[in-house]
Length: 235
Image (cartoon, rainbow, N blue to C red; front, top):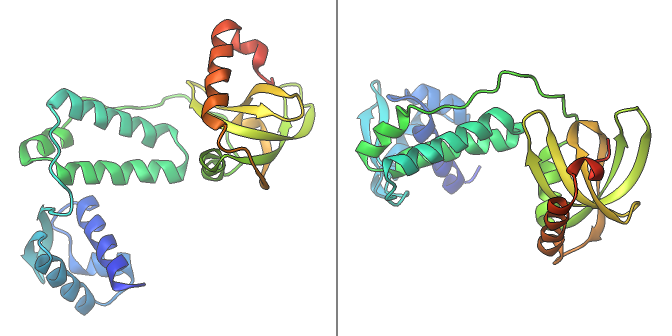
């Protein structure tokens, strides 16, 4: 691992872990020696990060100069916290980890008063019902939608009927009980909504539909406003 990458990871660990963080824990997380951690802490301090503590006592990130101060009021801060906590609860593992990291960066970037209020927010998010198990790689599906790349799926409807088709993924919608994929179906030559838990196989193709995702999604949403969504869902 390059030193620059290691220093970025070390800063993120100092943001994420409860202070004071022992050097031995940091060494284990980064798979390096204690001496390397001591040198890296010195390097971060030299670059402007204010890190309290010393060898044997643990380290605390007092001020993170890499994160510019953000001016949010308390309601805006709690709205951000609630949204990120909701993502942690409902999203796939990759997106949930990203939300945890974003929370840590947000806390590090705020003035002390707002940071304390954020960490003691009165708002939280919790899901009490189980969602159907999703077996495909949702992160790969998100990437295909961002890249405007067609994917080939195997789909089983509510009656167990199976189809194989190529689709253009447009958007993922987190609903109360399931994750829905809005797409342009090449087999049906129309817009369709697919339940992610009923997609049994997923593979990207070498076909791209850029730059049409935004306009197609706008057309799909307009169509949904005019028709019952159930009529458009591949059940």
